[in-house]
Amino acid sequence: SSGINAEYGVLADTVAPHGYTVPLDLGSRGSCQIGGNLATHAGGLRVLRYGQLRASVLGMRVVLPDGGVLDSMSHMRKDNTGYDLKQLFIGSEGTLGVITDVSLLLPQQPSSVNVAMFGCSSFEKVIQTYRLARQTMGEVVSACEFLDETCMRAVNDNLSLPSPFPDRHPFYFLVETSGSNQDHDMEKLEGYVARVFEEGGADDGVLATSKDQAAKLMALRENIAPALKQLGYNYKYDVSLPIKHMYSLVEKIRAMLQSYEGCHVGSYGHIADGDLHFNPISPEFSPA
Image (cartoon, rainbow, N blue to C red; front, side):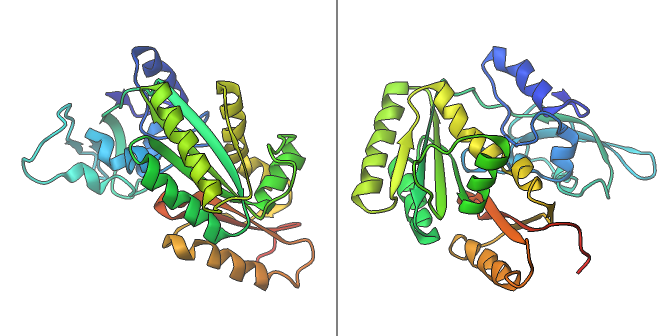
């Protein structure tokens, strides 16, 4: 169990020496708190692997608006007795009560983590590459992310994080695997990379061969928000859409903004669960 005022990063650092990890990973891991994660039902990069955060909540204690306390604390993974009231407060953003304590189910920390990134010519190719990852590495794939050229350029130029590719691409797809057998997992990933190129899913790609290289690839995705912020005022949207329609929304917004000087649209997200982060950007704030 964890006190709800614990920061995500503190909790992750506390459980890591014991061989566990937190079933949630966010770019804001250094500042966000578990209570806020639950109140907003944060998803993060690894919903594909661990599911939505509510699936990992075993118990909860909540202070209600009238001062009463709802005690649903438990350390049992299965409890079929009565109503599962704690689920009402996950995603309620504090409107029903204040979460003060929680019991979380923590997965084992993977001993093998591998990352690859691809440059793709279209969003359809991103979807193709993603589906192939699910088909060929379903048991070990833990994250599937995409970003467009606006995001990659912002990270490269504003944060001095270099692209792993010599040429620019309209889209980039990142895949991570997590498991317990490095040889097995790398064999799966290498086979997948080969098939991506055989089937024309990507124009270029890079496979990290060390933890440092893997971290650098992940940093390109995780630092998009602060990179886009330097382009101007960000109007942040976080929406869920059917995967095949995710980028259609971006294209429509971009077309609407063509007549406005200095405006951009940067988009990225968790393609595995249809979660799109799209950011229209103007030189300065405008209520229009």
